[in-house]
Length: 328
Picture 1 (spheres, rainbow, N blue to C red):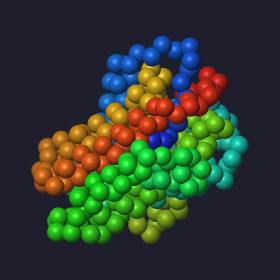
Picture 2: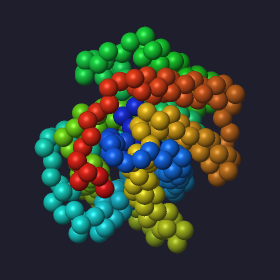
Picture 3: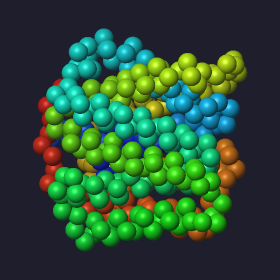
Picture 4: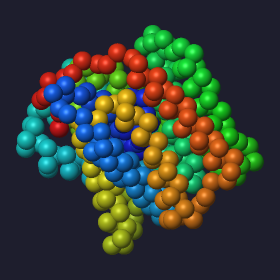
């Protein structure tokens, strides 16, 4: 829910990278809810988001972070132009609140950069867990900026989430202090991205929101490319990995779009915490890192915080459905 995607519903992080634009998708009232299919699609999307974060972590040990993140955005944008532009043409760039759409893209760009800086310095599982503070921050910001009532359960989730992060990033825990700072910055930027996703969901087409995030990141990192260009030739494996980041992120968003067509957001939101499991497994298998007992407790508490918010949102009034043309 890294762009981590990264990401994902307004009450769940992102992956990610995670663009996690797709969770703003409303449901078609006439489509059957195949819950199992939605779960499988969401699980696959979260796995792809974790793959993207893992690739980012590996590549940032060989290249500078802006270069790695730039490749992700440039590939993602190119794929959208090649595959979607012929079919959707002007729908890719047509918006009603362009300023907020651009601000949303900037928030995700900053989140991706900070996530890369954090992954360069910290284990995958702990970085992912701190980024999962984003939905808790969304609940806090929604209370003050959107005048939404937080309520007792909301405040319990907010306090619980911060306690979990303190256990993960505790002094003496062995984590890089600057890495923790970047992870927290990524979570804050991700929360801003999700909050803007919530504001724009009623007026903007999902495909335009997805395209603008890729376009803005490509423009920003593309203009700065001469200052951080790596003057060395990537190996075949590194080249494949650089190209695969945009593909895994884009495909992850697409699968999340399909997931929300088969299962309601209130059911899928808790599923996003499966990414913590994927991150823990990949951190162990690829990088040989295993969180200590206290960090595992903190990760569990962060997940509980998000689940409280997810189930709390089940009782809120559902947003009206958009026309079918808004879907990918």
